[in-house]
Image (cartoon, rainbow, N blue to C red; front, side, top):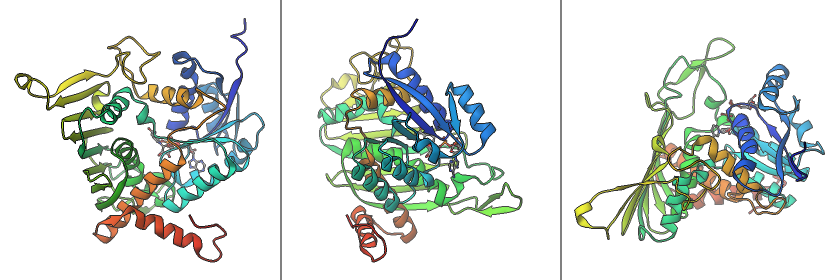
Length: 395
Ligand SMILES: NC(=O)c1ccc[n+]([C@@H]2O[C@H](COP(=O)([O-])OP(=O)(O)OC[C@H]3O[C@@H](n4cnc5c(N)ncnc54)[C@H](O)[C@@H]3O)[C@@H](O)[C@H]2O)c1
């Protein structure tokens, strides 16, 4: 028996690693948690190595695969190009997808530099296609609730915003060199981990106008897969002071050398009337303390952010069962396809590029040892675009 005649939104996914799998999972689950005008169907997977991409396609239930992403982009049975490859490849693939008239979902960070991010933004806006960046943590109920409470004035005026992201993926000096250690392919730790936090910061507290950062690379070379050792220039850890345009102040710390810390991130906001705190290790909880609460109950209260009254919980399990990482990709797919083929999609490449500008300001600041304004990064890119021979209009 057929499942009904709903039209399909046909997706081609470039890259079949951790994110290729997560996105396949998201498309599969999305129609189970939300009524959509279309059924998402992953029609083709792209990867560079035939047997490996074939095995992934089989495991993920994708009927076809190609070994050159350009063949995926040009296919008539692809409406959406979903980019799940290393950041250094994103802008080129996004540009080709936009030129072919496809909607584009791109994993974070949008690129490895602001100039590349701006090029990708110009390509999708010029072609008039739908575009989004995979800042999936916006799709966790507790973080969406945090943002909703801030926007609703429940903590008053935002004064302080802080976040940390601690990971141990670079701790072992024997971990071999791969794309994550190559600045041109993986970008920095600031961009890799920090981009999620900067996106959340700007989503919750508005524009970041200046940063003062420091970075360190503790393990300066790594075993090369070709033999010998390869120098590493990517930061193992970075931190920064943030100045928001609103007058709020913030701090941010990212590290990939924090022993026994797997993917531990925290976000806290202190407003004039209250505090909110989120810790990813307890991702279904949001802690709240309000200045107007009974003093005899002084302290922070744990909100179970899975209640049907909370954002992004509809269609999930009964409260108490947990809505996790995989769910963020299903929520992302459902949000993007809810009005398909209409948009707009959010967060779009404009937000991805704005995040990239803050990442780059942090990178420049750490290199100089000085405060750097975000608009300096924008001005430098515009200036570069105006130079003869760039073949692209500024701004
Ligand atoms: N949103 C999240 O929670 C999250 C988590 C992890 C990674 N990411 C992002 O997703 C992207 C992919 O990360 P991943 O962890 O899936 O990586 P991965 O190493 O698991 O997979 C990368 C995929 O890209 C392919 N690839 C590698 N180099 C390539 C090249 N030069 N050209 C074309 N294809 C290439 C690989 O074959 C593989 O299929 C990155 O941008 C990363 O920052 C996001």
